[in-house]
Length: 205
Ligand code: ZN
Image (cartoon, rainbow, N blue to C red):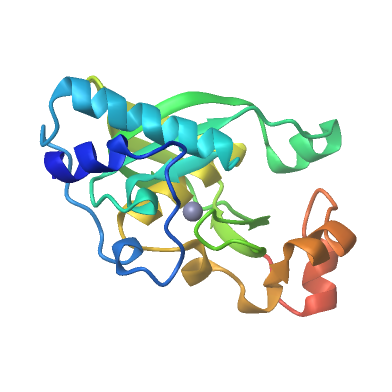
């Protein structure tokens, strides 16, 4: 594993992002338990950050650069209008490294919004997800992580943790909501997907 990552990091960055259809996105990941020396882990995390920012995206999981380790990064400057911020809970999420993350829903609330994935370029679809989740795991220094996420950051940590289990957002999406970026820009840029649900014929929670 370390050798494979050394090889990957020798290439130019940002790293290429693996697209849906590649088995590495479906295989699940090994828990991280020190397979990489601290310096190599730090370089790998930095490469994930550079690649996420360049895409640009608000999260990136190791399998998306072809690495089957249970590591992901998230960061969302949330440059959105006030009405979108309020409707979606899209508050800024500082850069974080998630090592061995696992989530469980807090309460029974669910909410559906359009989301996309760097590994499924060109499309978005509505995914109903728990409104709040408790995320446990570690950070990049091995310190325990145990935190409740709400709003858009809750969606981001679920999406990235799902990648580490070999799950893509499309597995959880409303199939009839599938929309090309252009269609989303033309028709579905409202703060919530209610009009899309009526016009395309799918249910929201
Ligand atoms: Zn994704």
